[in-house]
Structure formats: structure tokens, C-alpha cells
Image (cartoon, rainbow, N blue to C red; front, side):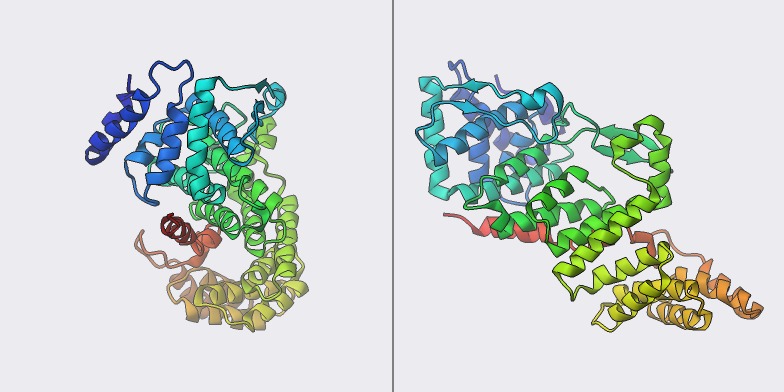
Length: 432
């Protein structure tokens, strides 16, 4: 019987088409001991889903829960094995990447019944027609779209493993979930890209895009970042995003959150502020080693060095960054951070000049005027101190994002958010 209980939450415009799509596939599985519904519907969804849209194929796959997705992963593994090695008769499904303990060593070998093999061989023919690499690309976009376009109707699919997504209130943990199996399946399928996923531009860009997409909302996915760097350890974009993640973890918000969990703090993956700044510095340096002309990495490294009281090094890096062709937001940040570094280095006059230049770029900003007020007070200029504080404390509309520092943690992701749509367009254009 078709599972339709979740349809009440599905937009009405796609319900009829979705039920027809799902029920037709399930009808083909009637009478078989093994349920081929998941793998047949998955392959059909890859062939028919329009990337970036909430259509019937996407909604159908979004309806699967954790148990369904575990069955799907078993079948995907068998299918991809037969695509490249048609004579294989024995299979063993690899454990999911996040799993630990007995489940991670659960490698049961099994064969296929005649009717099962017939289904897989027919599906393998369809996959070969498109090419395993093209199918892997489409699968990555399908599961990305489930999590981004169909999240409101998707069935719960959090794995029964350690918490990997924490929800943070005012410096405290207010909830957590496990790793989504949709991300896991996307990562797993991309390992089938030929000849080597580590040399595939789409795979690299998918990791860049999905990590950035999370950071744009201040969601830092440690598992996604870990797998990205395992495949692409020298990619400057991923190294910048990794540095931004660790820099964020050094901030008071994340530090307070980790401490609020007491003995469970280690589960968050957040280290002490000093350790996080050291990690951020290392990632930014690696990004610059991979791409010497990378002013964004230089700007952020300059800020980290200032926070570590390495003022002279920070001043040199930030001045070097300012000699490059920066956009307005990056120039503003470089001048703001340079003012802090110069103040720490004992040059308040130069610091004041740098902060004034930052304020000129973003007149409605707040941070430069706080610095100007502090330095003016130390110089005995009370009139300027008061006027700067007035500018810093001026009322602003909630929706008026006048201060780039308000989105600093999310900024690397926000600057790269369009890459997901670019990947969708690539996949949509790649039709046989």
C-alpha cells in the first residue's frame, strides 16, 4: 500500500502527481519478497527531478525516514557495484561514515536472488546509459535539494549516532540532532565518480558549496568539512572555510555553549579559544600557501593574529591585503582589523586613521566609531569621544544590516552562496 500519511504536509499542487509517481513504482514491487521500491524510485528521481525545484520525484524521496534510507544505501551500493563490475555475485555494504562501535564493523556478505538481480541489472543498464559520474552528480544534487528545497516536508532522517548538529541559544545548547543520512548518501555516492573523485571539479565544488551554504546560516557541519578536507586537503576555498569555522568556534558564543555542556563538551568538537585560534591560523596559512594571492584569507588571518596579540605580524598582513584589489566589504574589514592591530602595536595615531577610513567606507557601521571613541578618550578628545559614541549607538532598523561585523561569522558562506545554484544548473544541462 502506498504510504500517504505525510501527504497532508505536501503542497497540494504536487500531491496528485507525487502519489501517481510513488504508487506506480510500488505496484511494480508487489509480490516480491525484497522491496525494490526505494532503489527504483531513487533511480527514477535521478532521471526526472528538475534540480532546484520541489517536484514530485523530490517529494517522494524526501518522504523516506531513517530506516528507509538505510535500505536505500544498501541498494545503491549493490547497484553501483554492478554498474562497474557486472559479474559481482557477493556484496558487503560499507558502514556509514559517522558510525562507530559494532555497527561500523558490521560487514555482512550477501548475494542476490534471481528476481533481485534482474531488477538491479535493468537499473544498472539505465545508470550506464547516463554514466556513473553523471548519476553521482545528480544524486548529490537530489539529496542536497531534499535538505534545502523539501525540508518542510521531509521525514526525519537523523541517524542514531552521536549528535552532530547542535542548536545554540544564548550561549547554551537548546537541542541537537544526528547526522542526516541524506548528506551521508550524497557523500557516499560521490565516491563512485570516475576516475577519481579527488580530481573531479564537480565534487570539489559540491563540497565548497554545501559547506558555504551551512556557514551562511552559521551552521558549521564538522562531518561535511572533515570529508571535504580528506578529499581536497590543499583547496584554498575549503581551507578558508575551515579557518572561518574554527575562528567562529573561538568566539564567546561558541565557547560559552561548549562550556555549558560540562562533561559532554567534547561531543561538540569545540576546543578552547586558544586552540581554536591556533587551528584557524593554521588553516588560513595553508589557504595562502595554496593560493598566495588570496586577500580574504590574509584579512581573516590578520584578525586572528591580532586576537593572539601578534600585532606586528597582523599589521604586515593587513597592509599587504589592502594593497590588493579588495571589494568594499573586505576593505572595510581590513581597515577595521588594521586599526585594532595598530592600537595593539602601540601606534594609536595610525590606528585612529585606519578606523576613520573604515568608517568612511561604511558610514552606518558601528564598530569603527567604538574604536574611535576609545582612542579619542585616551587622547583627551572628549568632544570627539561623545560624537563617536553617538554614531555608534544611533538607532537602526532591525532589518538594516549596517554593520558587516554582525554577519562576520557567516560572511565566507554568504559570499559563496550562489555556488549551489551553479551546480544545479550544471546538472540540469547534463542530460543524455
